[in-house]
Image (cartoon, rainbow, N blue to C red; front, side, top):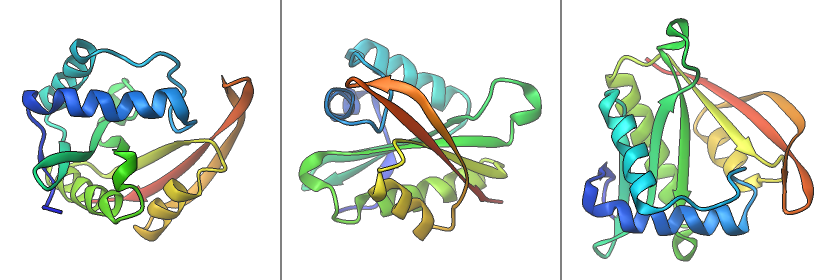
Length: 165
């Protein structure tokens, strides 16, 4: 497992496949239909075009996970607050990649001048993501109950926050 690096256009197929898995099988995202490579490339360019990090972690030369920071809200007063997103290939889950990616993301966001990071975690039963964020200094600041509908059930959003910078 190598240190995370900035993603490139060549990483888009792997990133798209990883995210599609979560869209189809998990409550971590409330997206219903997996976006195609063109859309994932557009999203990546939006992030990097704002000067925010979009990172990948590799295992044996293959993309095994990715993470990025995006604006928390579009209004100018929120410009120093970002929301993190982290997705790990299921074959590499539970091996420390999420911690490695989130740590690198926090550092890159601090260098970019960000002051707060918000985690919006799909499903209050997502113990892995809640535990990861807690271990890296995030604290739970709220739960939005039953705000999403996916797989025939209502889904909570857990809000966690950490100061950076």
